[in-house]
Length: 416
Image (cartoon, rainbow, N blue to C red; front, side, top):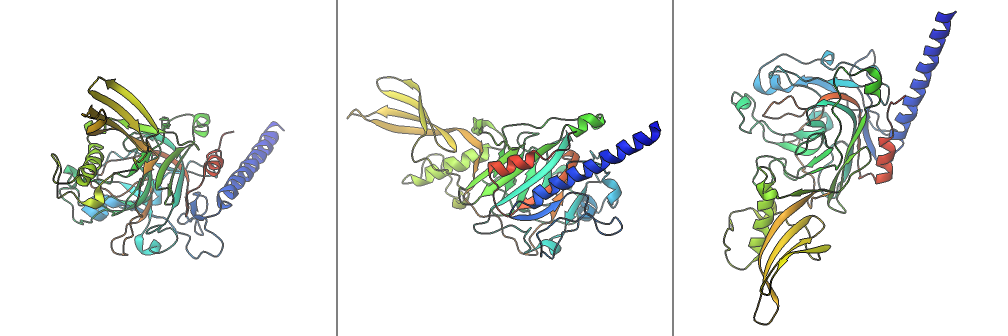
């Protein structure tokens, strides 16, 4: 009798879990503008490839192939199969895949939709006046790299691991959601206007970071800890506001980065800001690079300061920091003969990382110059292991969801 009661209780619990997962699934598919939603439950017949939930009438459900990009581009390592993505058996929508930390540098498995099966489809969000949202429900075991997106970083970059590359391709970046990058564990939104590097950096630098940071959960954590640890990573780009925003669990937050001039990567954004201002002055200025490409200047709006803080002031000199929507600029001024202040120098002392100002369109590749949509990893020359953990769902929308919608998606967890 006790065994019968236990079996009955388990059956009721399983039915309730299935109903809850279906209700969460319907929340995602019910939001207007959905392009594709992989819940890792929907599959081809007989347990084949994972399929996406797509709008009614759509003729492409984006089946995910398994691949090892090191074998494709370096000719090293073994093929990847679905066996390389263990299943959790539960998750926000009833299932989740594991992205394992791979010690073998010749093995970097990912799930992907090849370019030939996505080019010019709704998933291929690109070009003028396009906005988007990418959401991933995930648990982070370690690392902080790519979760999902069209973000082929190229195999042309010079890394020690890439010296024996057989198949060289330029960057094919459009949009990507990361669990870090700059700041590990944050939700990180990444977009590109050219598929390649930004501000003369070999890497793309248009990215934002959420104010919150996802925890690291041990890979062998108990089931109850795993079930309570789902995080909702999201990115939005709104072409109408030129804002790229990262969200973790429905919260974006206001993140600034001080002293970008001293940072190895953000110093290139600092220089792009500085070169833009020097270019606007008549004549060739000290420190100006006349060959710096004008389309790589980074000069967010600085018309009217939101606030001003006086750092120091004497009878003849004043130093103050003015905050603008995306920058904090330090001005050094000297009093002229008429009693007014003349600006002698301006310096960027802080950059806003969330939201990030992005005044461009999304990269619009050809069929030949476009990359795949991948989940779990992206193709890149460094061949680092990247993110490892569980991914319980990935959704893409063709517009920027608002805070209320993202909060609703963040509430879709699998907590008992």
